[in-house]
Structure formats: structure tokens, C-alpha cells
Length: 200
Image (cartoon, rainbow, N blue to C red; front, side, top):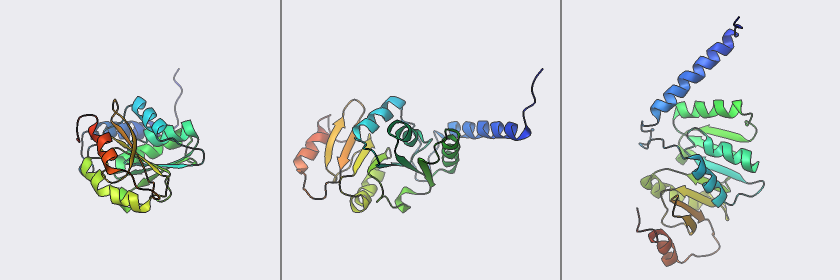
């Protein structure tokens, strides 16, 4: 004999299924800024967070957080505050649902909106997987708003002016640092970028 589920649970399950289906369909659709969502594999997320050198009490921002996988893993693994910014409404709602179901609302916050409209001064670590043109636009904002000692971890695409401190050739991960009290050697920066066969 089947147990009848309360109507509210049925509607919730159906709503989550439909929303999930829309999210899957929207993977190939461009967002409002013309960049399609490209989910980062779990192993690469782990590597990016490890390279960020996250410390207790720090705050991490994911610019274009998609389904929230990076902020969720950061909050659970490092027990820190994580903030995601997402411009696509469907992915924003999906992310909020997952965070609520995982009981992470006290640690993870998702902002619906354009990353260029947000103040990033709270961030100790910024994660981004955008496009090269978006990185080019974003760089000056990072330089102006981030605190000294903040780290920027960029997936695939690089920055020109921020000092690069390390990278992973296998995963194409670039790590930058906002050392505002010292000047980096630009030749060393170019060498790090060109080491894997030239700028992309």
C-alpha cells in the first residue's frame, strides 16, 4: 500500500524537478552577459580551493557561481563564509534551494545580480571562471576593491596587471595576489603566462 505524500511535498518535488530540468537545458544558453555556464568538474574545484590557500575566518567570493558547487564545497570543507554572485535567475534560485536543503544558509549567501555592481571589498579570496574579455574588464575593479593580501583564482583565463604567484598547467588555473605594498616583476608575470605555450 502506497503512503500518500502531503500535497506540499509533491508540489515541492515537482518544482525542483522542473527547475533542475531547466538548469540542465540552460547550460548551453548564454547568460545575460553572453557567456554560457560551464560547470567546473569537482576535482578542479578541489584544486582551485587548495591553491587559494584559504585560512580560518576568511571570506570567499565566487563570481558567477552557477549551481553553487564552489561556494558549497568551500563552506563545507573549510568551514568559512562563502558568497556567490549569479546573474542568471534560474541558476540563482536553484543555488538557493540546494544551499537550503544542505543546511548551509548560515555559511553560504548567494546574490542575484551583476558582479560588476557588487562591492568585493569583503573578499579574502575571489574565484572566477568567466571569459577573457570579462577578466579584462574585471581586473581594475579587483585592484581597486580587494584588500591587501587577497587572492584571486581564475579558471582558464588570466589577468594582465595583477601579480601572478602560481599556476597549474594541467588544470589551467591561475592564482593572483593583491600585494599592494610591493611591485611585481612584469617579465616574471609574462614568463608564467607564456610558460605553457603562449597567451590564450
